[in-house]
Length: 327
Image 1 (cartoon, helix red, strand yellow):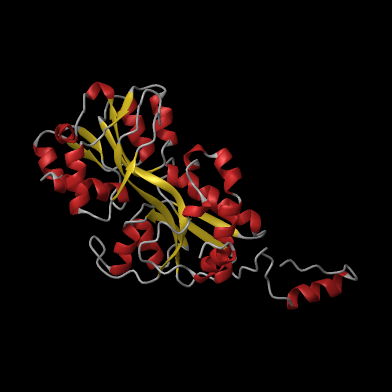
Image 2 (image 1 turned 30 degrees about the vertical axis):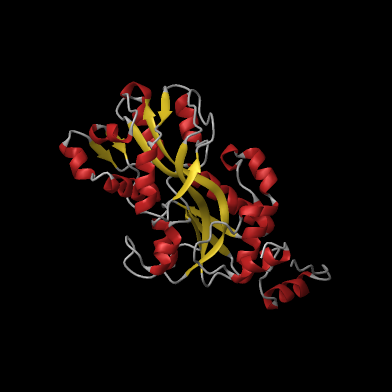
């Protein structure tokens, strides 16, 4: 709530300001700063996270915000360690961190749930000239698996395990594994130095892949039905989805895929006012955000709680959802 003072005298105004606690933000947030951990610069998560926190800034004049680079798993560790206030992650990974399930070595008990940002998809982008038509064709190729700490990289390792493969076996077959960001990976594919890019939690139209498709013929690899059945049976936390049709130039889509929500989580001691303002700013500004950001075209308020698989909902977010009849 903003405070207004009559300009009776400069000295009186100065005295009043000196004695008045700084609130200043639209929803009474006690925080003066707010940080969000996303992905690498140039990635879809970085763009979405930047827009999310910009909406919070607009609702809270005077708030200083920071967008950090990170990854689906890294963000959970950063929040637990107090290095970020909020972060983006996968719906399947957050409960693993909360319960201390591998690859997390301890319970991340400082995590709380805020909401779903958008439905994500595991995308395996291939260069058409590489002739990759089935998952096994990847085993001797030049691959960007994503950075260590990114959820998509973990998903790819788990998929390889289902097929009895790992990075060392790929290297033994003459393949190459790169742990790089999306922007660098797309440039390497454009330059002819990469055959496939693994991207977990991507929106149906990732801006970097859309840009790549304009200059380089690409495709999305559809894992065969039997392979997907094995993956879902071994890792039930993975969610089955359908890749939207025509996501990129020259790419059909429309096949079975590994999906799941990309969610926003917060540290437990984030104020109720801040959590309330974050979800309110995002969901009430969603129509305008979607008009500006094609990658959020599938986001809906009705799905806000659908990505929670075991985290406590932050009380501030819960207050908003109760007001809107969602809880």
